[in-house]
Length: 421
Image (cartoon, rainbow, N blue to C red; front, side, top):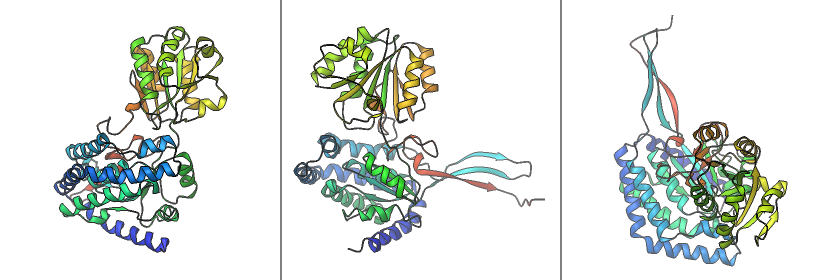
């Protein structure tokens, strides 16, 4: 295959489809999403079978446990994909919405209209659910998309792409509005990220190595985050029962996700009370604790205990490893987080309203939480229907990126024959 020629054809088809999608009405877009959701439920056995092929190949190739976790498509995951599409159907269509209309002294009216970005290239590893989430959000927001999933999920992605095209065709929308790159050749990624004439935005979802490469090589703007170094700070005014539940869930619900807690900060005044109880919970899951000197004194006897290094505070483990540090107060916790956080998601557990608000205002992250697990940092959980990714950038989109994050604003002007003097 001539990769350059193939990707140019994909890009041309996507650009043409994007023009049709930009003017598609809400009814047609919602119909397509409903048809895709129904097809996913109908074809659940076939999707599981395709996923099983991918899993068998991944295990044979020695894929890491975190990646296998992301690759696995359970019955619940299939149902969640369909439900996510139906949530998107229920959301208001942002396209064409006019806001901020103001009269100017000249007599003209100036406002802003929400419009699609155009063509969105999405590059991701392992996660087959991204195929559906991305397709659904791009369809509803009037964009075309080019999806380049990882080779480890090729069978499942192809099966899902077939169902997406079925839904688009059934609603009278162009099938090329959602295209899966059919080759697993990595050269296709290099072409996709250097086609600004066809692609308006790149959204990478994958490991640090992938995103670092794209940051260096892409000629197309990106919506991305590099690391998920998330913190939970347990304040000395925390409710102990809440703290135990949140700190356990934030780490142990799933290890291989970007919103999993990687560093636990505990106020000095509550550490002797809370850390031994947390150690029991973590010990049942064989979590290794890499702790500072003060925390290790309290955790003495814990079977999986090691001294934390400077590097541990800036590491995204994606594994059963947790860095633990004792801090004096909320101010020191905020200082540590802003120094080491990847600006993804950070949480405080406290019953003190003033400290909670200070944490919300001063922690410079895309999602900041009070008395909740970092695992809630997710488009589905935020009511966005799904997410195309999470951005810790500060321009355009920040946090879980849903429908609105896939649109832009243009100025519109209504006049009555006015001319500028």
